[in-house]
Amino acid sequence: MSARDFIQEEGAVPAGFQPMERPGFVTHCRGVYVNVELRRVAARVLPEHLNPLGIAHGGFLATLADTGFGTAIKLTAGTELPPATINLDMDYLSPALLGRWIEVRVQIHKLGRSISVASCDLLDGDTLVARGKGTFINNTRSLHGRAP
Image 1 (spheres, helix red, strand yellow):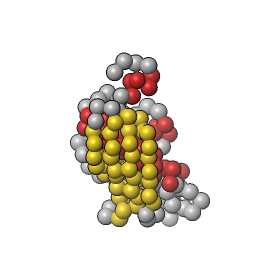
Image 2 (cartoon, one colour):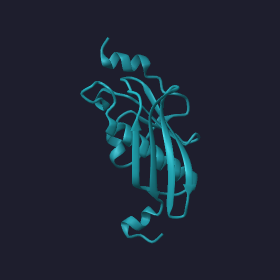
Image 3 (cartoon, helix red, strand yellow):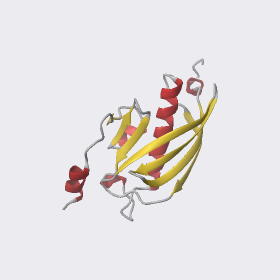
Image 4 (cartoon, one colour):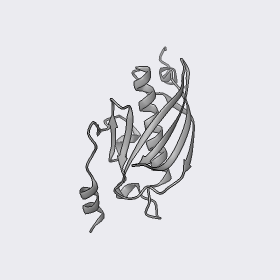
């Protein structure tokens, strides 16, 4: 069975998840989905997400976590723009394998006017693949010289 056949066979997207349509870098990461109601981001691990060991690249998982943070904070705060990342820490605990559905579950610890702090779990079903934590600046308009 080819990698493509495996992904198509295992590739059902859970109810409520839609392809992420966000401008910028994430549009280049095929297979990323969002569930607005749950405030979650997830992805199917595709061949282009793999490192030379045949598991999801840590950079892809960090991108997934960072995107999950931005989505959850933006939706919770009800803002037009997502926050910008000040700091992002990742711990990789289990390999994310080809074809697996990896879901980001964010816990927001502080949702401030300027700064937010959150942590997340990246899960393959019940298996913890990675953990992340981050600090974010919420007033991203100021990064572009626009008034808050």
